[in-house]
Length: 326
Image (cartoon, rainbow, N blue to C red; front, side):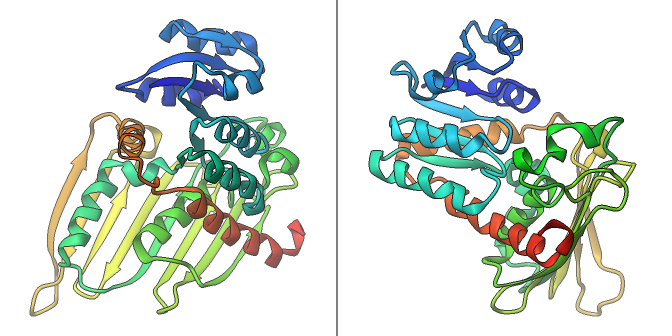
């Protein structure tokens, strides 16, 4: 498969480095020098014209890792040209912006995957494996925190501009948490919560709080923050017979670990198994492999457009409930 990378920043570089069974033949960025830098590592052609990259006949797959406002525009053109598309999360600023992508893909048969790579972290793959054995029993609720502390000038970056980003932490790290909650519990039917800006001088949220429920009242309590100061990732899954706890994502978030606490017949202290994953993060590689298999098998990608739209609708509802962002 011949791949074009549109958006050659940090995520674009990760995506390019994860490709196996294919070759990057075009690197595109409005910053031509940034595209050149990535192209040198994969001997690709360079352009600053995203329309060329999205529709070129020499391309089979387009990976879109731009700012949020451009994600659906590039993806729509690529899908309309019959290219398979991997769109970096959140996929768009609002759910409705993905409707034209869906129409274009339906018309040409292009497959579209949304880049929720956290599903592919080792700890989550192992957690899913444990859940599918049924040893945790029926799931009751999830609890998660995901946070970082920003950096000097963070409030002047593109993520702080709602016209470009669509929002703050709710649409940034919050989207990963919502996607993971939907992946584990199912569709979210009831949305409560609040988004606020406590510290950063910007018109988007620096903290978002979610209290989400499924139709059967399974609950996800989620908090995404860029005032955490020490990078944090914690994700707890509670069943009637046990609990899974994931901490860390590698790097500055700490070693990725999975704790399995299994209830005993007499209750009291649970049986505990700890899995530790100190190796490099391979979630990007696994996600690309899944998409490549989607294409080979001509199967609908999971997560796809509707998954991104469902998660975006949750974010939109929180923003509607938070008068600061209306």
